[in-house]
Image 1 (cartoon, helix red, strand yellow):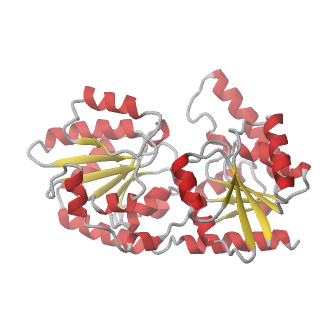
Image 2 (cartoon, rainbow, N blue to C red):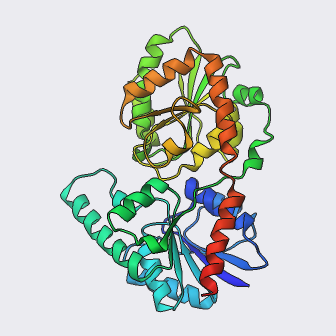
Image 3 (cartoon, helix red, strand yellow):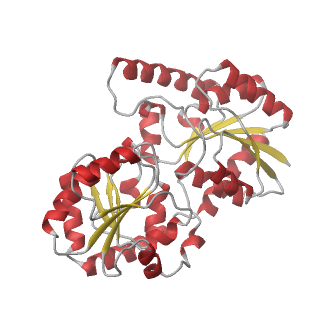
Length: 381
């Protein structure tokens, strides 16, 4: 049996990477591979990992080029007799690959977000300088210390190849997948609506994810101002499902925009599928994405989706079929798309049915199968 170290830099708690890793832990062939997680981890995520029987080696947050972090990983890899290192964050991909090199181990990096997105859209001198340095280091390690680069987004794969950030011969695309069985049976949606004081006849617009700048929730709130003006007589709610650093700011923004009557902060929920099933429309107004796991969960819940044209969103959602694809940072585009769906229940139903069909293309079983093929190839070289 081969031991695989899964490495992440910050505290794992909730989000797309966390869901991706749980799929890996649940479906890996344990007769061949033994996964061990090297990462800081929250208590609630620790419970999720424990349910899969995976060992956790707690670490401090990993910083790029941190000698202390590199040495701790080296010691951990040696102590656990690791055979292969699989890294899942751009920060950890620096220290993790150096540690793997020191211990003579092959390293794989799954690119959930590329180094070109370091510091987001910020254009300060510090951000520009840091981004350039980070990209340079990442490019070097991609060519000399990496066995495979696995992209969850074909769009980001193409961008990385075109700017020679990654070598084509070592790079491949394996889209994210989700556990479709979780969406086959959920509890009564009306009971859930009642629990959150939402009328059964209300039209519920959902956002789910981390409450952070790159998700564009501020733009969604701007759009809801216009929706509230044109639909004053209708019962419309916006559920913001998730948690994050911007929660307080967004709550204050909601108050200043006089949206407290229609916006509900639902918080983090383990049973996300139940909340999505209780909704009517899903909106993902992100400024940046790679391959959104929550979008896959939304289509598996049969929701028509409004998404920005970033990452793989436009591959998952065909404009006008499963929903609408719009430019990022445009509240007016969200408003326009919402207006169409709010006024046409039959279109919502039709697009939702198409979304449900589309979800069958994104099984996490297939994702894990392809990744295991890479493990086998590398470990038998």
